[in-house]
Length: 116
Image (tube, rainbow, N blue to C red; front, side):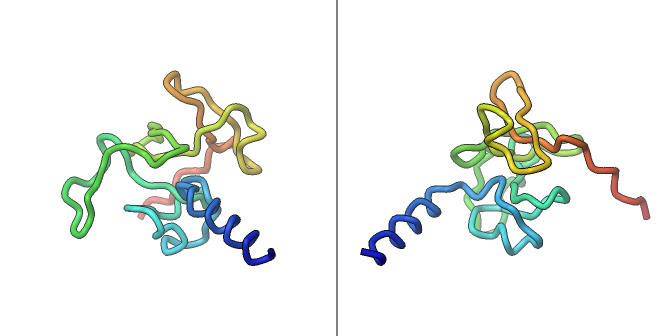
């Protein structure tokens, strides 16, 4: 019975797109195409106009995985987890209305990275 419960949990985890998962490094987000760890320490991927065209070894779609939407985050477009309200978002994130979808965004934007 425990094995069946473990398989059910594994199947549920496999359904998750990965967008919005907590991460520390890019390899934590490698389970989906072009996934990387953003400065906000969540998994995301480029989308829309910022999606690389013809990335080697990838069949890239400008669309976001299930349960995420493409959001304009300054210099690029990225996939963010969709939400109904802020309770659906991780700590430090709020549910923001993009007009076409609601997504989990940082409650307080990060300071810009230092220039070289």
